[in-house]
Every structure is written in C-alpha cells, then in structure tokens.
Length: 359
Image (tube, rainbow, N blue to C red; front, side, top):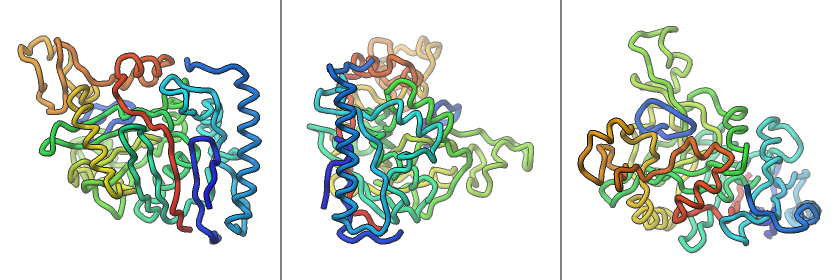
C-alpha cells in the first residue's frame, strides 16, 4: 500500500512491517572539495496539510499492520516555490528545528532506519533516478540519508555540480544543498558528522556517498598530524574527508581513489538512472561545469588567453568568466534567485518517493 505522506514525499511500506576526488560540502583547499513566492491563505493550507499528514500516517499504520507507531515525515509547506507552481517545498522552519535538535518530535523520519530501501528522485522532464540504500554499508550516513529522504529535504535542491564532459571525461554529479533561507547553514553547523568513516562498499561507478569537507594531512605523524583524529578510517597521506551533512554525490566513473580518504558509499543507482544523469550531464556539464571555487582564480584567469577548459577538465570559461555555480552563493538569502536567474537550465528535484522498505 502507498499514500502521500507529505505532498511530494511518498513512502511505500511493505505489506507487513517488522520490528525493526573529494567532494564539496562547505569549503576546502584540496582537490575537488570544495524569497519564495507564497500563495494566499498559505497558513490555512499549511494547517490542512499537517492534518492530512496525520490522517494518512494513521491509515498507513493500519494498512501495514505495524506493531509500533511510526511518526509521519515532516509536513511540507503548500506554499509554491519559484521553480514550479506544482513543486511543494519543505517548511524551512521545520528543517531548521530538526537541525538544531535531531531528537525533536517528527525529526527522525520513519524510525528506526531500515536495512535497505529505495529512493526515487524525480527531475521532471529530465527523468527519474532510483537509488537503493544499504544501511550495512555505512550506518551513520545511511541513517542520515533515510532521515533526509523521508522528511523531504531534497525537494527543490539543484544538481549544482556536474563533472561530466563526455563518456571518457566524467567524475561525479552532486546535489543536496537546500536553497531555503537558513536551512543549509543550520544543518552544516549542527548536523555534520565530524569524523572520517569507512564503508564496506567502494566508490565505483553508480555508487552514492555523502559530500564532505576535508583536512590536509601534515608531513609528521602522531598528534601533530591534522589527519590523526580521522585514523584509521582515513588511511591516505594527503588529506582526510569528514563533515558530511546533507549533500550527496553519484560516481559517474570508478573513483576508488576516494576510498582511503573517507568517502563512504551508502547507496547505488539502479536501472537507467546513470543514463538519465549522463544525458543531463551532456548539456549541464558542458554549459556550467565545475563549481567556481575548484577552478582557477581570477588572477590565474587573467593569465589565460584561450577559452574553454581551464586545466581542470570540468571548468568552463566563457567570455572570460567561469560558468559554474559559486557554492558560497548557495548559502546566501538570495540563493533561490541566484540559481533561478543564472542557472535556469539546472534540473531540480521535484519529488521524492521512498519504496521497497526492508526492516
């Protein structure tokens, strides 16, 4: 049985439930890291949405013959976003509340985290991408993925980093930055996992992991080494990755060099999901490319006389200007307008469906 729990988030339950190269997050110095329109009577619609969620949650408990109560996912605001009048975003204040206190009522999705589940991301006319998450691969980040997916966090987030030029030049695609004012900063500040982790899976093509910050390792061993707190999960000598909060990436190629640095896969893309992403990449990867902070500085650009690639094969230069997204702007109050006005072709997550849940 299935039902809409929170407008654009659907959780499809089993018939019988049982008891139970580095990536960018905020900023980094090593390779690869790095006002919505509201309709009238918004408050009334929100009240109706919340009441509807309660009724649906109760109905699902009966249909699934659950032996315990299950909190509904966070209610989503019925206030339309500027990306599409039919796309309904989460309530920013609720997401911030859950960032500040993960144990608050309604903030843990459908608890406890199952052993395996599927998450489908709908990118509208571009297609859908289905992922299968495995808690056993990396429990800490798998639990976070479950929480974010069931609470609707990813709805409205853009595919802001697309490292894809062609089938022979591809790296990752990254998304998961909320453009709702204050939300991303709250999760980065209060919910980052401040340690390196390991996974039983490798960063092979089609796997999914959380984007992280990183610290450069020192030349000495022991306490003086900035990477010491992240051993033995991180075994690399150049840098260690840690600090994931909400952003995820999909490996478009075999990137096993990320394994010893702490990037821990928690899911895999199923079916034609990779083909969907690469079709998007053929356009977006060559139109916008890499985020600006991972491309040459303005001083370095001044010394360049040619257009096109900038050393980093994913950086795009056009008319003397880097074309990629500036990650710092995604944390500003005008992030929604920034993406809408300057990167209108970047696909956004329109809906999330959680299904095939295994206890």
